[in-house]
Structures are given as structure tokens and as C-alpha cells.
Image (cartoon, rainbow, N blue to C red; front, side, top):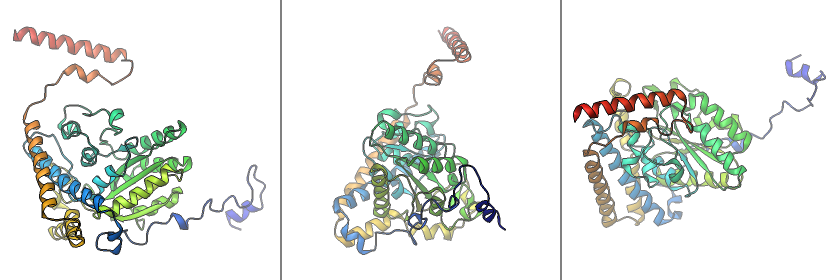
Length: 379
């Protein structure tokens, strides 16, 4: 007799026959059999031309933002920059599907998503410049600070979304993660609570193939990361992460489902990190040039421009306008980051606690005295 057979013959308080059966039918939760694609398929003709042009514009501007931020890092103007080059379709689509009242919970590689939401690049890059914990007001922008620890923003997204629903607000939270983040306990806890609470939250996992130098095959044996959704009781979706209209469409459906009471969704976007993990990483130690070259042929901008020109919704004038806007942004970034920031050391103690602790007050007083002494010597 198996354990389950034994349970059926034993009186257990609060237990009824059938309690071990699946709570829900797993079939509707299973992810797409193959990644959802729009570019190069008949589905492209059904897309709104204005949306397609907007996605293309944001991709072009986003690529230039990544390039300029990477250059600023090499010049010492940024302490570090984890580029999302090659992943721009995920970044711009995530920002575009959210309403003004919705919340974005980015990871450290999602600076472009933050900028695409309308936040000034200088403010978005403040954390990576090392001058402040964040450069923008999370409440005013409905955008959480860039999250450096893996997946810790995911439970925050669930908590905020659940609280908003309890308060009667039609708010959706979108948490962005990398494939490495799915191996963290915070990821498990966030998805479990989200499904149990039916919280209006969407999890976007950008599977770019590597968690720094660790390939996906060395950290997960799941058929896809989207399959992990089934174990928590939420739908999983699988999409080509370099196909901007496909990512936008899948995320838009997930956001609408969450907003209308359908609960959370886990979306896995298959993409690739073309640049190194950060400026401190040597990617040639764990991946080959042919591998990178193959993914460059599947570049999101290349795919988008080719398809939109064939469809007749993109011409030279529109492409030139997007390129000019991108160069203007890069020039503004160079000008703004050329000037050294004026910092107030006492700001270190601001916003640490609502009510400063005795230790914090003591440290603040000590620093204040040291600054005053330095100023006296200089004068």
C-alpha cells in the first residue's frame, strides 16, 4: 500500500478524499509550445501601424542609450553599467504596456525600461554612477529603484499589487528578472504568494542565456522557465524576446488579465545579452564569437526594420528621425555626465529610517563635525 493509498484509509482530521488531487487543471497553465512570434508572420499585418512605428523608434533610441552608457562607463563617468544591448525589445515593451498608475519593478539591467517609462537618463543612471541609492522618486514615477540583489524586487511587486487591490486601485505591477533570478528563493516566494493571493502582477523573465558566466543549462533542468509557472498555479507564456510586437502583445494580454482579476502570469522572453555582463566581465571566457554572431543576426532592431519596411509602415524619413532622436539623447547624456555631481555627504542619512536611530544620529553628528572642521581648515 502506497502512502496515498494509506491516507485514503486513515481518518485524518480536516482531510477529505480527493484532497491530494490537483487543485486546478494544469493544461491551461502550460506555456506556448513554441515562442510567440509576430515579425515575419501573418499576425504582423493585424498590428496597429502606429504601435509598430513607436516600438521601432524606442528600439533605436534604446540601443543608442545602451551604447552611450557603456561608453560613459569606459570613461569613468559611470561606476558600472550592465547593458541590455540585444534585449531592447523586452525593455521598451515592458515600459509601453503599463499605464500611468501601474508600477514597474526593474532589476539592475533594466535601466532602459526605466528610461523608456519617461524617467530622465541622468536620474535613471544615478545608482550606477554611485552618487545615490536612486535618482528618481519611486512614488512619483511609479517605478521602484533599480534592484541589484537578484529577485528581491519580485516579492515587493507582489506586496504592492496585492495592497493596491485591497485598496480598490486598478493597479498592475510588472517585475522584471533575468534567468539567474529564477534560481533565487525570492522568486519562488513571490510566485507562490502571487498565485495564492491572485495578485495583479506580471513577472517578465528575460532569458538571455547566462547568469553572468553560468549558462541556463547549468542552473535549470525545466523544459522552459515558463513551465515553472504551472507549479505555482499561474499561466506561463513563452515569447521571442527579440520580437518587439510579440513581447508587447504577450505582456499586454498578461497585464489586462491581471487588471481584470485573472491573477498573475509568468512570461519568459527568449533573448540574448550581446555585451558582457558588465564592464568588469570578460565574456570571451565562457561563450564563443560564433554564438554571439548568430544572435546578432537575430537583433531586435534588424528584425523590426526589415519587417516594417516590407510591410510599408517604415520609410527612410521615419528611420532617420529615430536615428536623429537617438543621437540627440546621446549628446545630452555626454553633456550631463561630463559635469561632476555636487554631492551633500549629509544626504547619506536621509531616507534611511522614518525616525533616525540613536546610532544614525550619532554618525550624522560625527560626520557633520568632521565636515565643519575641514571647512575651517580650508578657510
